Image 1: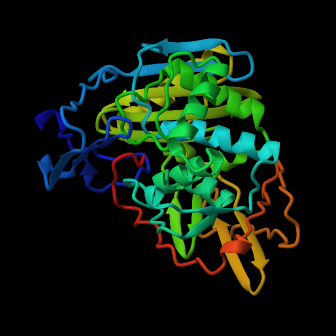
Image 2: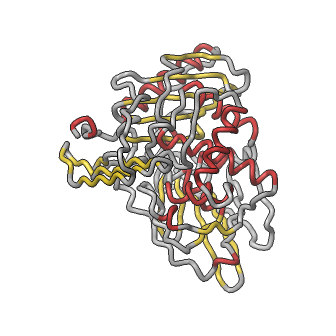
Length: 402
């Protein structure tokens, strides 16, 4: 058990803090379930183990490289590699898995297979995923767009599983097979997915290079949806859910992507930043602390921009983000979805607000506007199922939350 205990992590650069958690592992095919309780100050508070198949055993974490990070930085437009270190080691993606879940969601939206305001049912399987989560209950619903926002901010495992089940015909395992096939089609040849969330599975692996490819393709293939990755705060059913990505708050030019963490994977991060019309994507995997992860990403991106001839920029106050307020009416109910922004300068500076009319179901996009409109509709068929519980307080750590 000693190797499962994780040192206390000091969160900095505007990252939130709280108790650490050990890993919960699920292997559906072999019917193995392992749960390891919360870890606080190096002490395990609770442990439970259940092996549901006789003779089943758990293999060691082959993708883990303690003390060795993987780094990859490339020009998002040309694909030129600008910095790399151990880019092809197979590692656990943790919640960076959700980048592929989002790719599949955006692809299904474009194909018309699903819609932004479509009701996504919450199964028992989805509701019982380990944290981080929105706290959705079986039989509840959320919209596809709320699911997207839950992934890019809260890194919600219940929402990721629900989207996977929706696109995978009710089966998360089938959706994971679709994810793997799509990854290989994109050139991510050393990647395998086993679930939609990134919760630990010894067979779910990827590399920093493969995740760099995925980041490039998300930007290139779905420019109309990329703005979701820059959302700093998501208001969901009365609760404020902040984005876990520290780079959005301190690194000049950063405008997305995603964080990830499990005890086995370490702290992972994919970031995209643009300066002087040069867009880079960066990947850091296996950091031992949030501060190390952020420092390594910032230094690697700085190296990349320097290689592209982009002048260095002094780190200042948090970068301004657009505020998005979308409101719609579904029958007699009015659902409110607000995305608050960090404002440039004083915290007391008023923020702009824009409202999207409820009548239109069309998706609205504006790539460069200071205020963007997002059509966020409550699921008409699920108005009576609005009792899903709220997100956990922002200070609480969880197994794959960052």
